[in-house]
Length: 234
Image 1 (cartoon, helix red, strand yellow):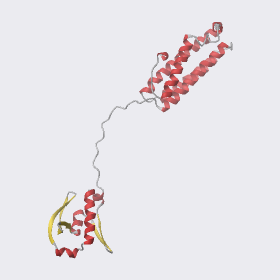
Image 2 (cartoon, rainbow, N blue to C red):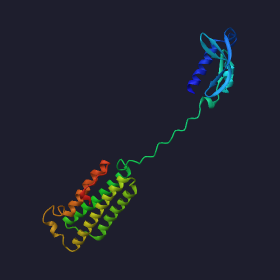
Image 3 (tube, one colour):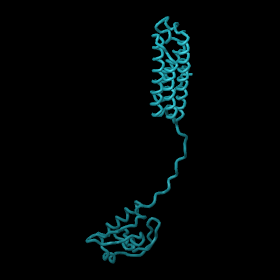
Image 4 (cartoon, rainbow, N blue to C red):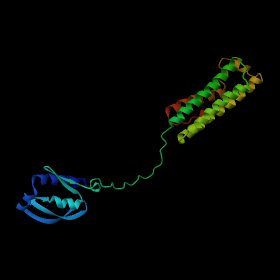
């Protein structure tokens, strides 16, 4: 249709150089003219080996309108001719969504949970190493905050990578919870003197090392935006 409109404009230009009365001086005959699937009869004149169509017949075939303004002939085409409806484009076949990594919302929530667990653990270590009382109430408050942040991370998980990382975060929370409960019980039983053997006795404890290693791994993994696994978080 675009080529058709270009031809129509060229025809209009040619007609402005060759007024209608000149048609009588050349070979003129009526032919079937087809424009964009619409057929009709219009006078066609051959000049110098080229065919020119009579503009009024062209107007009828295209169902347009013709007007004369000063030294110009204006052919207006219907909107349906100028802008034909676009052909239906088939929808692409549905393909499985590729899980490209951790979502931004989960990354933010996950980093917050790691920071909460780290604060919970480091404060507990400091209290035990320095002989400060560690109460069930204090431990419960720290545990509740970490559980709350874990719930937010779970709500933010929106793809497979998020859910896999959430499982590791949950494992880290459970490890910290069991470790915290054990230390509170030992402190109550006055059984924390063994951690005074050396400055790093509590930090070198296997359970402490597991939590520290997993925490470092999770911080790096979530910060990278891509899910990875590590034995320390199992």
